[in-house]
Amino acid sequence: MARAGGGMGSAVNVGIAVQADWENREFISNISLNVRRLFDFLLRFEATTKSKLASLNEKLDSLERKLEVLEVQVSSATTNPSVFN
Image (cartoon, rainbow, N blue to C red; front, side):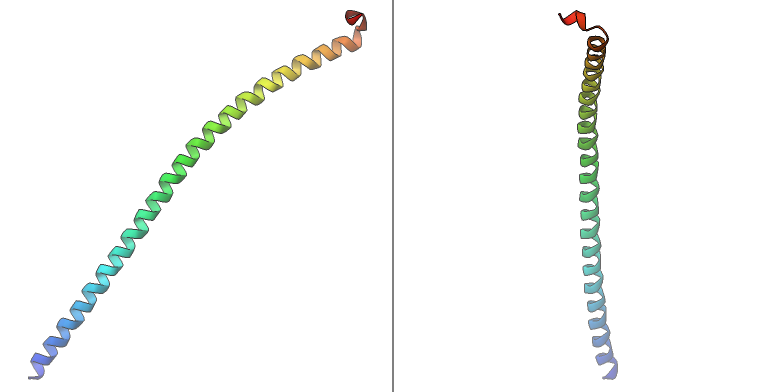
């Protein structure tokens, strides 16, 4: 009779272990899914940020060229004011 009781306790322990293993696997699966989602977000964020920075860089380059032209015009006007009379 002790054997039968021991067998029952063993089956319960196995059932608890299986349940714990299932919960651990589910937890790990959820963590993996969230890590993948975070990674995908970071990839999209990087692409968007690079695109926006490239656009801003083009605008800045254009403004710098316009500023250089204006600086030359101001310098010319300062050295030769008769041009504007």
